[in-house]
Structures are given as structure tokens and as C-alpha cells.
Image (cartoon, rainbow, N blue to C red; front, top):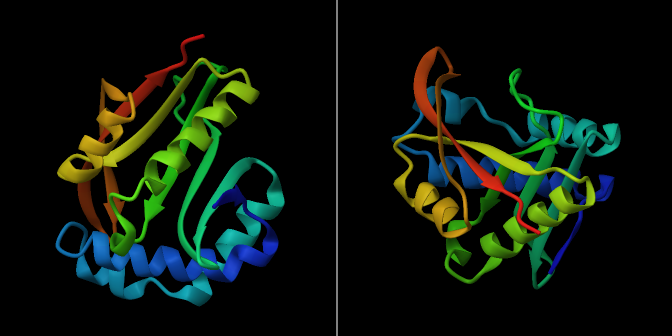
Length: 168
């Protein structure tokens, strides 16, 4: 089930963030970064994100357990047009991959774009994360030519930007 996140979800979102990042990014981002992630530290972040109202956040539950989430907001890129949104995070537990939950979360994000009258959604993904890139491409996103390095505990990791153009 996909539904909007509430403050009551902050703990489960924090646990999912740490669990999913440690499983998905081992060997991709520095081990020191992953080791430093704590549920306690992420709870405060999720509470702030949910409470501030700047983001649309949805969770995916299976049998009462949070197994995925998506966070969408106005684009944070300086050159972005005002009608551009950004998928800031989309994660699904590895144990439930390929069951359609990621697609449902992405569809929810596209619905946010429609409600907010955004013509474009972007997202940044680690350049070497071929599985995620294939997922985004299957969801209708394409490379838009932008690239940057993201700092993970002092280690730069290359990212590329994908975009989805809203059709009527």
C-alpha cells in the first residue's frame, strides 16, 4: 500500500533508510559513510522533512511493514525552471525488489508533479548504480546531460541527472 507519510512514520523511515542504504550501497559509497549512519540521527531528519511541508513523502507498506519510500520536492538545482520538481529519494528494500513497489512509488511521484503543475521531474543517481539507472529509464526518465560529484564522508562519488517530461 502506498500512502502519504505522517510524523508517526519517522522511526520506520529512519530504520528503512539505514537498512536500505547499507544493503544497496555497500562497496559503492565509502564504508565509513555507511557505518556512520544511525537510525537515531535519521529520525530527526525525517521528522523535520515530514513536518516542514516542503516535500511530498509517501511510504510503501507490505503487511504493516514499511518497505519503501519516495520524497519529492521543488527542484534544488539552481538552474531549474520553476515548474521543475525533483525526486530526492526513492528506495525499496532489496527483499521486495521486482514486485512493482518502486514503480508504484514513482507513479505517486509523477502524480505529485501533476498536482503541482510541474512539467518536469529530475533526479540524481550514482553514475555507477546501473540497476537504479535501468529502473529510472524503464519509468520514462532519460539522462539530461548534467553530472556532478557528491561528497560521501570526504570521498567524491559521480552522479548523473535524469529527467522526465510530463505529457498531457
